[in-house]
Structures are given as C-alpha cells and as structure tokens.
Length: 110
Image 1 (cartoon, rainbow, N blue to C red):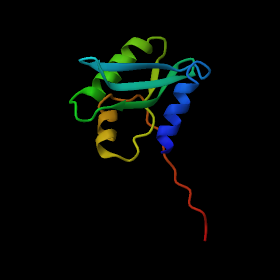
Image 2 (image 1 turned 180 degrees about the horizontal axis):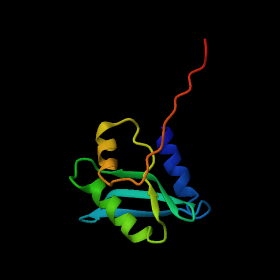
Image 3 (image 1 turned 180 degrees about the vertical axis):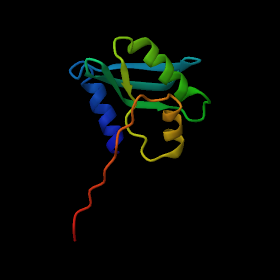
C-alpha cells in the first residue's frame, strides 16, 4: 500500500517534483514504467521502476532505455535500494556501480 501511495503521489505531483519518467509498451500495452529526478547536478535518482515480471527483459529494457534517453546530463545514476532481494542486488551489481552505499540498522534498546 505504501509503495502504491508513493507512486500515485509522485504521478500527481510530477511537474512540481521535477520528475522525469518513461514507459515501455509491448503491442500497445504498458509493460513497464519508471521515474525519478536529479538529486544533485551530477546524479539522477531512479525512485520507481516497475515492470511486468512475466515478460522476460522488461526490467532490463526500461532501465536501459530510460537511462540512455534521460540521464545524459549526469555522471551518476543512483538505482536506490535493493530491498535485500538477492536477484535485485545481483542485477544492480551487474551494472558495475562506481560506489555502493553502506547500510545501517538502528534497534531501540529494551
């Protein structure tokens, strides 16, 4: 629910948030979409990326085409969180990232 709410809010405030987005169609049907924004002058952050997981290559294609068409003015593309999912982590590592963030977990005492 939280992710869906964030997507809807992002779409409703697309211009205000200076978002860039893209979608991928197959036979006229939307099979993937993505959006994000410039976080710094040299870094674009992809905040949302969704694709039909039953269509082989849909995630790779939306990722590649969006970056190729929308991120020419930045040095870095931040793919954000891998959610601890091994497949997503492996995919992100396959892009040979220049750097990876360090994660910390805080647990309240008691």
